[in-house]
Image (cartoon, rainbow, N blue to C red; front, side):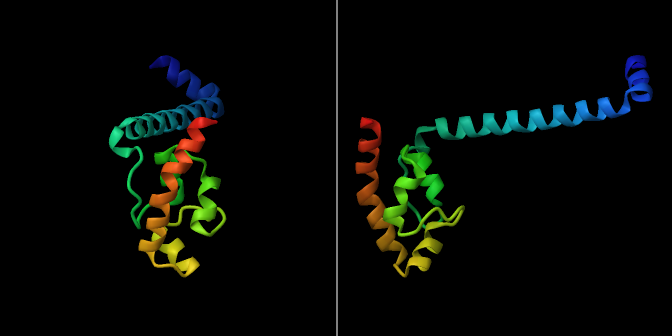
Amino acid sequence: MKVLARLWREQRVALVAFGLAAVLALFFAVKLLVLTIYWSDPAHRQVDPAPWMTAGYLARSWHVSREDLDPVLGVERVGRVPLKDIAAMTGKPVEQLIDELRAALPAMTAHHMGN
């Protein structure tokens, strides 16, 4: 405890910077652990498209690049927008968009795995 008190008196800026760096490192380590556990679960692989999903979620689940989905979606990289909103933006019913994804995703995965 004496060492910390001395550091606080003599090197306050360095101690605060170290503390912030440690908290930031811990945050990213926990985030990495959570995402690794989530995507390691077979239930999250090749999931059936649903209106709440984003293109990025589908791309990760099906192991394809996000850009490969753009032609099927009819939009260029729109960020974290759910499929139901992408369907509205393109003027398609969400079920039609989901059916198109269901047809295209297996072929994209096979092509991607072949490269």
